[in-house]
Image (cartoon, rainbow, N blue to C red; front, side, top):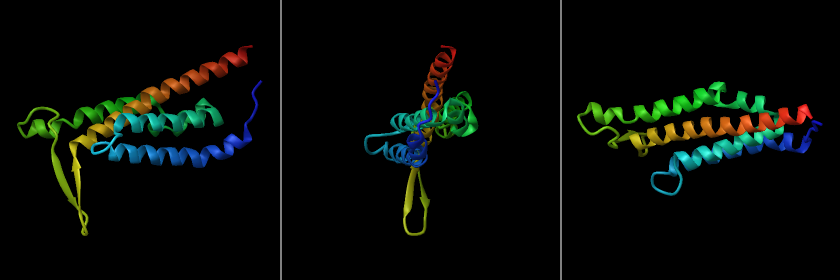
Length: 147
């Protein structure tokens, strides 16, 4: 028996966006305060799970970046691995953190390879755990349909 939860479907869209924005805020503040790629990625997973419960696992998979949890997780691993190359190319140890400033006119935004690494972790967690959670919901839905 597949019942629609209309209220959840209506609330899911703005809540999905709010959760993703919060996950990005947590990702960006993680180097100086609690948060970072892993916690931000977990928040992104909750957005995907919310969408899967409201609209179905296939719809949640289609909302993922790259529309595939495996590709998203692989991209995250690649981004994380590439974050160590700048230091290595400069003759330093692989994954040594480097800092630079991006001038914005009114201020300078400090950026580092740590943020690139955290972004890789964020994408990997969202892809791997999000894909796993969506697959569990999909198998639960298939099991209910078989009964």
